[in-house]
Every structure is written in C-alpha cells, then in structure tokens.
Image (cartoon, rainbow, N blue to C red; front, side):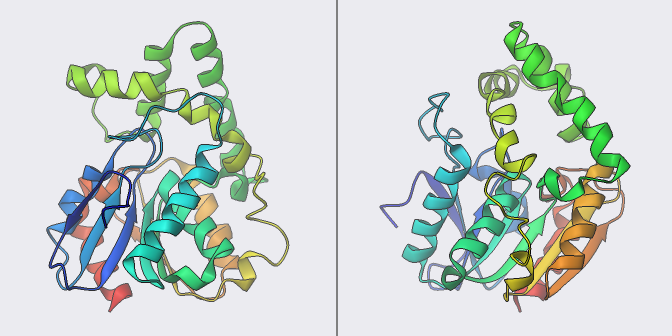
Length: 261
C-alpha cells in the first residue's frame, strides 16, 4: 500500500480490508475509535485531498472528483471489490464511487452523507441553505475563523468552537474554504448523483446511519436515499450528532459489523 495517499490502518494485515473515508475538516485519524471496536477486518483510512498530510487545496481543483479518483485507486490496491464506509463528505465520495465504479465496491456504509441536494423540497433544506449561505460571505469578508465557528456549531462534536485546542481550530480555519467549494456537487448535484434512475441502479447493499441529534437536513437526505436505493437499510443512533463515528463509535460499531458480516 505504498502508493496510497497518507493513511492509517488498523487490524490484522491479512484481514479483509475496509476502506474508510473521513469527513471535511478532519483526517484519517477520525476512524481510530471505531477501528478499536471492529474485529476481523483491516480498516484503511486515507487522508482526503486537502486534509491531514495531503497537500493543501489549491483553491481551484475539484476536490470531490479528486477524492473519488483516489478512493477508486485505493480500492483497486486493496483488492476490489472492497467494503467502503464513509462519513459526511466521505460518505458522498463513497456513494459516488459506487455509482461510477460499481466493480470496486462490495458493500457501502454511509454515515450522515451530506448530499444536500437529496433534501431539496423539504423544509429542512431551506433552513440548511440559509445557514450554508453565510459561510462564503464570511470567508470573503476575511472572517475565516467566524466561518469555521459557524460551521462547527452545526456540524461539530457538540463542544464550543472556542473551547477546542488551538491547533485544531487553526487546522479547521485553514481549510474552511473547502466547505463552500463543495456546493456544486453537494448542493447543486453537478455530478448528477441524483439523476433519474441512477440511485435505483445501485445493486450493492447499503447501510444508512444518522444521529437523532443531527441537523434535520440529514434525516431528509436519508429519507430520499432510503427510498431510492434498492438495497438499503436505515439506522438511527439515539442522541448522536453529526460526528457520531467519533462520539458514538460504540453504537456505530455493531451496526457496521452486522452489515459487513
């Protein structure tokens, strides 16, 4: 696996691999808590483009498309088809990978996928759009830290942004422009993930997981995906927010294990 991007791996080297794709403003270490609770698999998590030990985003390239290309290459190196678990942005990458390269994906676990376009028409989408629109305005006005704090208030682990370690705050502030840059794919569906018949044609089993304390737009997204995917099961983790792979790994682990069994 020397050709993989910077990554971390947990579990026996001869165990079946599971490719794990983290959320925006995070890194591969996001999966450490879950990995400690899964047995019989080797969890391989690569840093997404622009994150962790990857080069900084150049401000222009399509990070979502790049992330899909890198995930496809990783799946091939791990011995496709491979099981894939993704969280938030990473879950949308996992879904796009399965749609574009079904030969590479055996089973999917989508934790809080932020394919916001799937919620269009739901009142929760309007509320999301109002909050989301403030980020590019704040960034353009030189308020990257304020934008990161606003983003974290909705999508973080529940703590106040100001209470986070200084290094973590700086890491998020430095990358906050990545968030509105994904609107084309995640909000306008420029990759046509929701095109007529496309989700319906996905044949691999899909586990959809969300937290009951997540922003309401997540439930609206999951409702659409559960309705349109032909082999999907939906699970809710009581009391969990958007960062449930970190905060509620103990509740997520048995759901993942059962799906991969």
